[in-house]
Image (cartoon, rainbow, N blue to C red; front, side, top):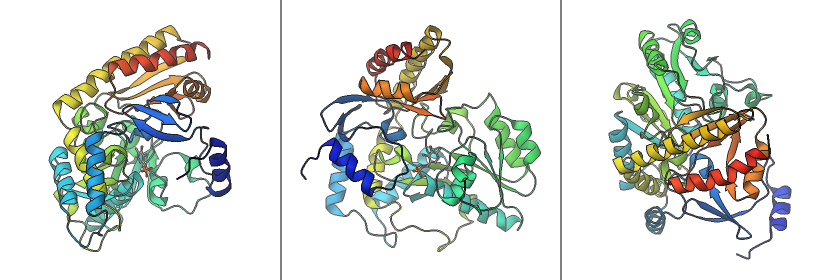
Length: 400
Ligand SMILES: *Cc1c(COP(=O)(O)O)cnc(C)c1O
């Protein structure tokens, strides 16, 4: 493959790729550890990780080896046959989650779509009008019609109606509003334990437990979308383990296969009974290539050493962000998050700061307009944090 210039690639993209992303003007060539390199050889420290996907960084040898070996054996064979890679990955997820059955799709949206479907079937067996799914304002659950309906951000739903019915919204962290909304019609409450895309919002003390209690009282299922906050990001494998509240269904994707497309939903045996053969399916989901990658990630992240490192680095990083807030109080309003999902809410839009960091060799992200969001590879070190802060600090100073 002949290497083209940035301009050639931009031109082709403009002509031929459906314009749905506002992209930054760099062409990524390759990655190594926590660094990305562009087409011109410029190096960037990466605190976005492909949106919380590249949990083991780039060119992580055991992951590259496992994918290469599996690709040489068989990449795909359909779900009409068994593979050891898939059976292993399911067993690992069941073991780590404390839930009972796992299903694999190809993305976060598909994982959530499956979770909504199985919840609806489960509730239908109790009562035909038990179909209400309650989700949160400012949530993000994906881009399929059902998951963007669950996503409590009207701009994603604009002009796409009629949307699937039976979805209602309440404000995250407002337990009274949820209580008032729930009834015997409630099929499930669906939420991210930590809201990612909506601006890194963390649960108030006791909130998730109270949501659990309300679900139990109304015989509704509790669905945690851990597509972003799971996979060790909080310093526990699942965020719900961090907050000690167990859901009936949990969904994963993003980091699960370290960069290979995958999604999963995991359910209790009680919920699993709602589906019979034929009720759900997928051509690609959980194919041996994706599962071989997931198996490496699932052997690596849920170890005490790995998770303790996430916790420690997270505490160190959060303190550095709080120091920056103290230094620039008019610019940084609040620092939030847990482990290595951290946010700094600004008093103004963050895009210029993201751009200037990129120019200086650091990739960060801004979400919800004014929240700098940090979701780096989980292998970052304190030295990497210092490196980022050395770039971020003068950029903040220049943007007061
Ligand atoms: C990214 C994300 C999704 C959607 O995942 P896709 O793989 O883009 O479909 C769903 N839920 C949460 C919390 C996410 O962060």
